[in-house]
Image 1 (cartoon, rainbow, N blue to C red):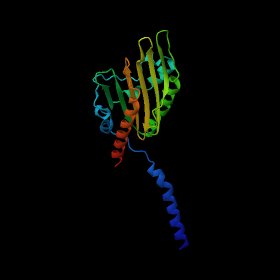
Image 2 (cartoon, rainbow, N blue to C red; image 1 turned 45 degrees about the vertical axis):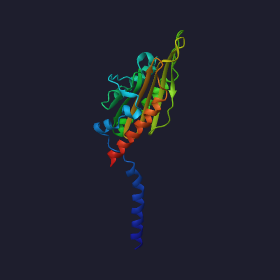
Image 3 (cartoon, one colour; image 1 turned 180 degrees about the vertical axis):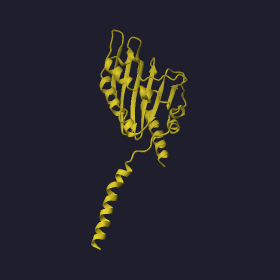
Image 4 (cartoon, one colour; image 1 turned 135 degrees about the vertical axis):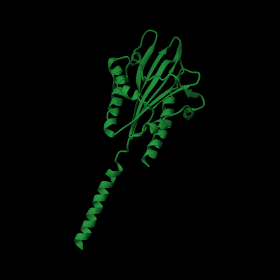
Length: 218
């Protein structure tokens, strides 16, 4: 009888020990259709937004990156910029808006992306490229934590003699959550940059992505 009781207790402990590991098992990658459903739309951001017919797959151009190290860090984003799951949104009538790129995969496939994001912040934030007529530079951007990790940078270029607002500005934000990684690029030209758009877009995008992940796990 005693051996039976001990055996039952041992089995209970074994189940308790393995349950968290089973619960932590990674979800399967989202399918292309599921990723497409998770993309933000103009309507998600407000009535003043519309689809951008120009699908420019770029986070930050070489001139804006300024240095060799920052250019290399931005170049490392290329695999996610080629994702078919992408949204291109503009503020109607203005040269400003946001782009979103999504990928999903196994933990092994996605493991590279947080280090890529860290290197981007390390090698780009703090870069300055001022001249007699303009001020340009990149700073670390904090929009809050979304998902498991969030990293961002903000580039700004101003021409004080013309306008106190930036002639060009761009936020580049990488977010990792579960079985997916997201890249958001919010930019604007000629004083139209919206500094709050990245955070608003991230909130909506994260909600839609997590809903897609939850539906896929059912």
